[in-house]
Image 1 (cartoon, one colour):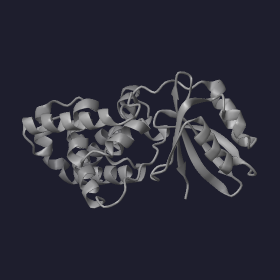
Image 2: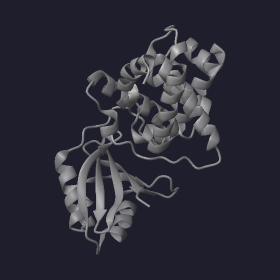
Image 3: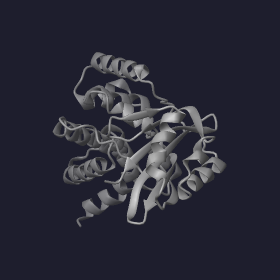
Image 4: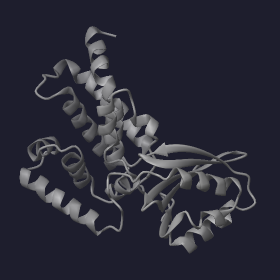
Length: 275
């Protein structure tokens, strides 16, 4: 590695986790985001000798990552959005400030909502509302006018406001007692134990499938048909800044359940099947 390459690696590598989170917000897929970050670092390394320091290295890399993500969105425009969970372990790191920056705006409801926006509106909303970039910088990056940025931001905010989703970026802390009882219910194949843990208006969804179950009766009815008669092993983890469980069958990992809490009980169960 050349001296310049070594300098670039030393300066850029600590930013990888937050760049991954940024690409994930735009793409909704851990794997697509990882590809976009790799593309970002490749582009940046090739251009590093021309980096003039007019902005910080962080801003420069974010700009490259945004362009890489927009290119990825264009290339997959005919596919359904591939919403995937993002393990907390990928957006941690030793720098607490960087971890906070990475974890901002990665709650599943927010990321899922973003995927419903046109690519430019999605980028404008993330850059302006999550990263707090000035409108002029966003306009320059996206080759838009300042008025165009403001208009796109207003349309994006209006679209999100119409969605029936909890878009609060601060996840309510999970009740550890509820989590223990949730795990026990699966390991004993007894969905009846979940009845007191979930809200009356609980929702269960399974991205990218369109089917969604609303209400305690519908959700528990669906889970009952999947849980009974099977041997489960449940492992606690975290994804998207939220409590989650890996649900294993003897043949391997079957699903990841990401839980959203409201008022001390489970308000949403997002199930990612391992197919």
